[in-house]
Length: 305
Image 1 (cartoon, rainbow, N blue to C red):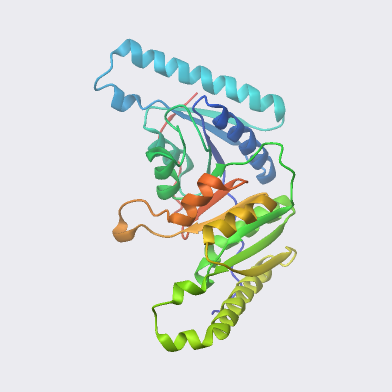
Image 2 (image 1 turned 180 degrees about the vertical axis):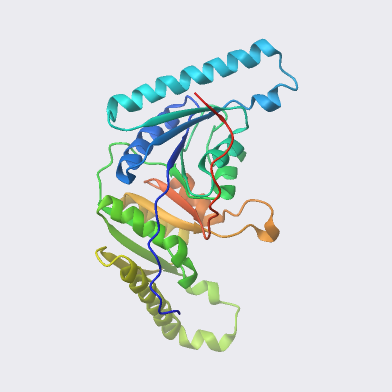
């Protein structure tokens, strides 16, 4: 591993998806708190999908859809402003479909925040194609807001890690913890049954294999401490047979759980694995999915209101 101290990650701007559902409303308010922590503005996006609808819908209906979307954005911006009077809130009414609209608004550096249920557009997040598309294809981080709004704060951010390759996105989790003045907890699940069926002699040294995992996690924690010397970093290897189950349980005692997202196989299709799916469906706190590497494209597209 290189001795060079990695640079700190910078938290980007906040883009919140809006569809009129209670879940999206709650997510926008959560996003407003996140924007205040980061010292940035909040950008609200509503996607009407009218570019596609124009092919089969009359002009009056398209106009009604756009006016309803504009009213929705104004109403939510006012609600956010009432609770966060010092926060700058911008609005965007996009003609694109929701996945494309959010990706364009966030670019390569912004963080997309969405609720876990919706009415349409962003509906049934992570249970349908829109949510999966956002989490699997966004260039930057995506946060799915889950859990009760009034759940107690635990002053911790939990990162689900595996090995040294996780360092790039883990530094963003460290930045999240610093913004919250919270502890960063690294959790690595070690499932011995994943080795069954490999080289038989390896099973004679399970203790040695476990110690290697512990040392690898310690090394990863040390790398984070080098970059963020004032951040408290805890690390723990959790033995078990269900990685999703262990991480869902861990989400009960943290304010945000973060995990990395690899590249798409052969460059096509969603890249979310079963662990990410399980967290997005069942975690007790917001879940952040971070690409292993992010582009630095500028936000484009959409219509500001």
